[in-house]
Image (cartoon, rainbow, N blue to C red; front, side, top):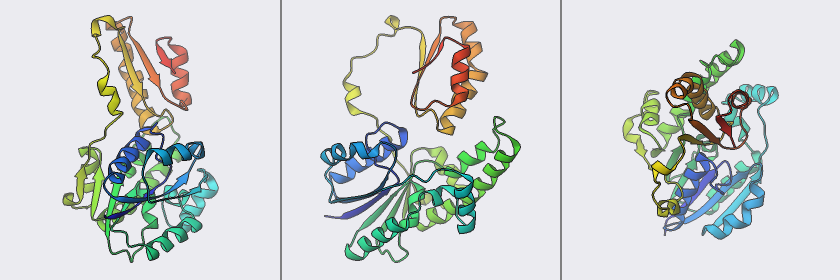
Length: 287
């Protein structure tokens, strides 16, 4: 049976966000077919789900370390000193690096699956097996879009632009160094290919939600209220940016046509900009 080392920046359970859902489904699939060892960081409330996680998936080994390195002026300066993007520095641990290195010496892993680009820094240059990079997003593009967002001041936009360039250089290197790069959308593939990576490197993978939801009875639309539903993490900038675009640019026109229309926005840690908009309109419902 082939051995896989699965490197991920957070406990991939419970699958309560888009990123965790992708990681969880991938891990479930692999652990049913191969011998998988998971090395991850614990963040926020992850520690409360460790026992349940162990029961849900069959693993050869689970290693974890608490990581709580916040974005700050200090971490940003340190990332510049080390010559790496901010998110790479924020996910660096000397102890974790040593642990991974030791495991790579002791075990003959056939594959390292790097779940998120921030974890590629733990792949040894001497590793002889296959390397799969699971790119949840074209990360540089998120920062590039942030640099154009007028909600932020000029300094933040310029820093975001510089950060996007640092990330794009890093993403190009790790994509080219990987045997295959997994992407969840064709747009991500196109964006990463623009960096100079051969499109043959990429594989488009399907993202699947909770399979049990498919067993629910069909919705009778005539019996439902006229409403829109958004579900997602509400402090993740791409989600926030998309919602703000919709609420500022489309919502009033839709309300003129459908006065009873409501939008339900469901997710954790709502951005203050979304909270402010919901306070001004009773039909924008944050839950």
